[in-house]
Image (cartoon, rainbow, N blue to C red; front, side, top):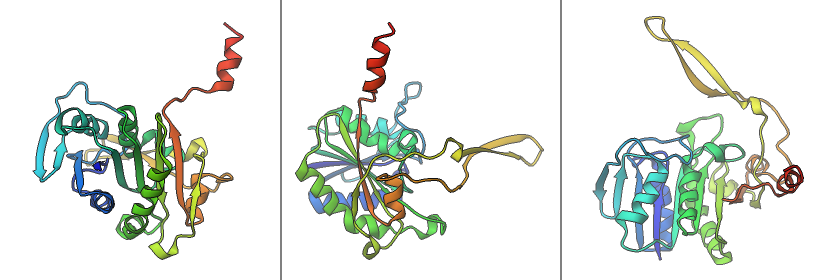
Length: 251
């Protein structure tokens, strides 16, 4: 089974090595095609106004100066001589739950694989207040192969991708697996952080603000809080059927 591995944190990211390790537990034909630099938050964007630069960095390992979407297209349409049987995207540094999936380059890598007809899974590792220097990478590394095997055994229908989030805990701290709905945070969870440079000129960062809210029954957010692995199937078709029916009567 040929597996394509990509991510959005870049070719040198620790999580990419974890993802490749998960893939190698399942197959000896693993290809890595990942962005040259960190592409977190680029979502499902394409590089249409800049050329894609491709660099071979090792055996079956390539870096692309572009987005995760670019990487999957480059791999399937140019690098590989045959379509892979599976795309694994991740393991992301930080969870991709709730609205994160709309911003995430990790999820977008799996989305592009799905568009190109390949079963695809996004993998992300949550971390907590201790920060990026205290990420439990062994959680995803330990539980990832079994989760992916079970998903593949069950099968992934066309037009569906699977979003998997590992909780912020050591492998033996996982309290189970929850097949979860995509959660929803309050709209105020993003903020603009204004600052000034050394010459007093203003610049801005997009930031996050923490606040308490109802995580929602059966959601990925609740599963992660409960130290469970959240498995969330996502659809490419974002049509809302009830509104479609309601609008059909208007026009």
